[in-house]
Image 1 (tube, rainbow, N blue to C red):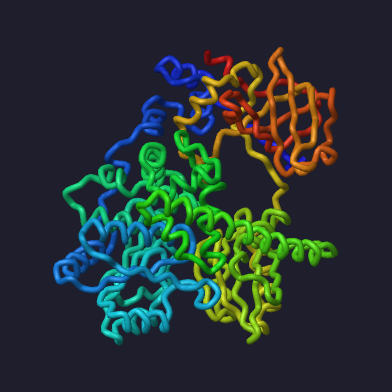
Image 2: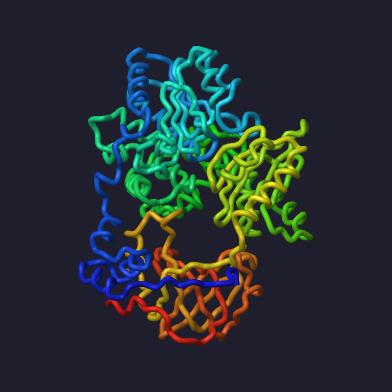
Length: 576
């Protein structure tokens, strides 16, 4: 088992019956009730677009000033540059702004700093370069909120600066023409969890006062959805509305680059969902930034030529293959060094000549593997390390870094993910302090717990029609996880290794129903179940298409030998 404890939430049977009587699919009704949507109005709001879901952009602090200054620049024909970030959120936000300015008849420049050479965010050499290129107005996307000194320097150089960002603020707000960030302490905006591309989209909404947000999403929704999902923003509130509109555009009329990427990765273009974006499109787009070729992904997002999109996508996929090789090698080294360690606090590890672009992925894999916060640092020849930090559980990474700021040359990010720059001599002390903070915050390290929505006692409910109905509950993601279910006491009819032994294929039977399952990254020999035996199976139901045939497949989350006991939860059969 991957999890020591399984917790099954269950659902309100009477509420689910009422939702079914109002026309909601039984399996969808049970899921919504398990998530607390027991009233029809709440359920209807969850699956229906409403104009009020997307808020007035002018509620964002400094948005009127930002819109006014941009309109002035457009009327004067000033030279405008967008300063972005090298992750998917920053790249989609940069492409979004350039696409918009093109629609206004203006070609703006894009500047994205090199991950290894410059690091994250505004910096003096970059500002000097933009000045030499004739920049009169610089608009940041997905960065800038902590660039107090850099904002002052831009003013000294004679350039106006508009900052749009979504990261955590420090005590000082940069002195710029406008600083638009829903996390500003003086913000009155009703939703603080926008992605960087979401804030950039709000800027376009402010500039296009005669169009509704949903009209604008018909042009830019695909970029907004991809950037928001890639940055693992909560899929709730306004983000949910933005992503849902973006998924519709991706399914109906995606821009050529994203269409080529969907084809290259095998993502289902007609039924594109948040999982396909998060696990198929985003890693490849991110590969360009990680490998120091951010322009490649930006070009893919901006091209209007389908042949060029196909060629650029092939280059990107090759780059992603190289990224995976580098990441795998570094993580293997981390595993080897951790083999004799029993960590009880944040893992802080540094290495020489580690490829800086994959530090974030290695940190995420390390945190997941040891279920602890992780800081992975690449040291350069001058003894300066640039690292990526990933939290785990309830640990607040950004707040912890704030308490260690005297050890850091620079830092930024949010509570779940951050980046740091640190001198070699301060790494041991950072490890010590983070462990101290961790022990103060996390009194008892929680056992790995799997949270499931409900138990399905009548597996015939898992048919194509019912599983397909779950798609109406999209988008899923952070804050709105995909449905997870449990079948107890199923007979294991087949247990077979696939993918060179890295994965396991199962077939389970219960109540005269046979269901195919796939358990990724789980070797058959490591499972504590056997063919012919009885097992409890935790899973997420999916529709699988192969050679034109559609079927239900259970993506296994965990399995364990079945131990008979009393029935504790209602099942979907009760509402039909």
